[in-house]
Length: 115
Length: 117
Image (cartoon, rainbow over all chains, first blue to last red; front, side, top):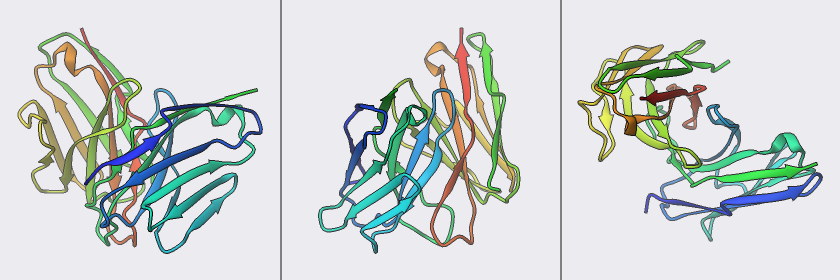
């Protein structure tokens, strides 16, 4: 019940394409869904996050779509660039006003954007 | 703001020695810090959660006597890998969370690459 399933495992697109990464969860207590971007040899960096009371959130070229009834959410990268080549992780956590909530991570998607 | 640092960024040690990794929140007070390990091409695996001034809570399967965690202040947590062996070679990442925020958000450090020979 604590798992977050992420797909695909790897993705290759051409520059300007729109890669889509999907995640699904089971735990209905999850209500905060961040996406992280990780470059080789670096720690993950928060990219964008969403709460389930909205169906979509956009920040720059990154968009999260959220389907609460299906317990699924996805990341879309508009006008993808070679610099977007990285590993992307979705995550989920129950939100609290304290800092002790643990993140449950998806398995990761290795994105390659070819020039 | 919300910068987390780790030191060292990489370390090579001989089997049987102990290695200490520091995690610092530079511009905020971290009431909770998390330690993860990550093997190549895999996701982050939570090892333990530590709250300032309290004993760490370890995930199932993580040896608390091997991975010693100290969270002595609101800006510093340390992970000591005791009697390291080659199978402990991994990428160790800490993250820090702060209370008072509406939604739980963790800020990640840059990671420490440990290689045990």
